[in-house]
Length: 175
Image (cartoon, rainbow, N blue to C red; front, side, top):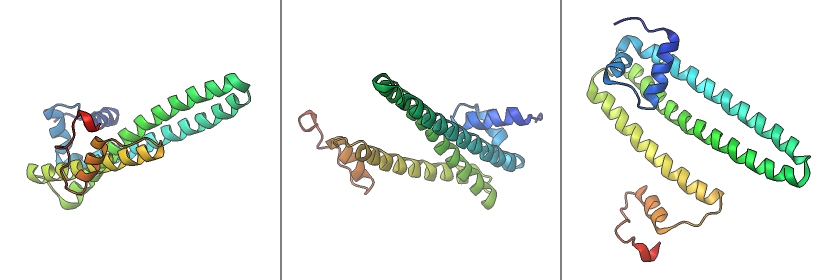
């Protein structure tokens, strides 16, 4: 295996989180001699994402103050800027969630010495289940936060968290 520079390795790690690497590249990451490097790259990526979020929040506050002093036109500009900032921040936070999930997987591989595909696949399945549980919970909290009315589909999704399948009764008339 040829040596990969730190920058190339960091890009590989980032692309892995996005599931955009080849099986050969994945084998490079899964080689036990790269686990610690992989873990360090993920930690640095999380720090970078945290810095991006902090910068966005600072810019958001600065724009809110600046636009707040511009009167009626400023209110519209502030709303548009706030939406753009929240959208960028949400994308970064979503990616950060996946990076943290991958970091958990790699850390567990290091701690357990998991080197066979069965153990790694089990880690991935467990992570996927946790991811979906968190996604459903976040979905519910966002509906509450933005005071949106839940549909029958939403309620069926929430009941899935309790291992209850409630999608059969949904039809166009009860949406």
